[in-house]
Image 1 (cartoon, rainbow, N blue to C red):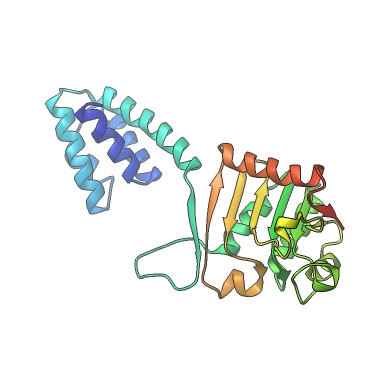
Image 2: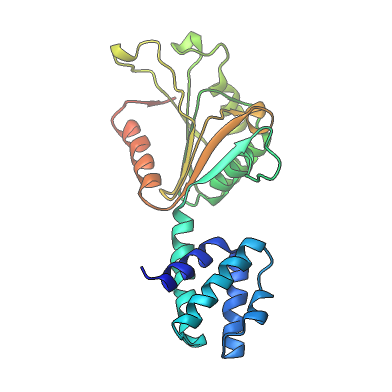
Length: 251
């Protein structure tokens, strides 16, 4: 990668999609590289500095506005594609000043509402999640096959003092519930401690949060959202294989 190419990539990666489009549009409208006009299209100080560096490199190599436009548009497409695959940090709880992340419930709702055919959730426990319940019932209305794996209550061989399966079944009548009842000896006493949500092999949310009101709104919870790529598909395949092999059973 030469100096100009590196500058193009650094600029396309750092600025917002809207700012990049604005710079490209200005190059097309002007038909020439006017640094003063182009700098007005970006607002952040760091972005301006990257743009100046890019324009200096373009001038040094005698690059035309047309060629620079093509390079930026090509870089924009590549960056957008890989940004869609890039994990998104999800955080619930106190956040340092100047940071911005989406919260657990927001992302969980995105995954549920994004499902069109299949949706699989796992959690240790589940209760008092009214907005999640509404979204799950709406998914069932769309014809989505909704499955949820939960830890069993103590009276059914699990490690929960309450029967969250019965609680959730009462408000999610079209959801299929599963339990880990046939546990090999080496897993005796183990629990369903995974917390994931997978939609259509393309969206996967891996989180520390249970399906509870406190986890959605008050606890300190962390997770990542994966869009596209192989990992959502692999996780969906793994969950489905536990069903098909009888590792977990429908209740």
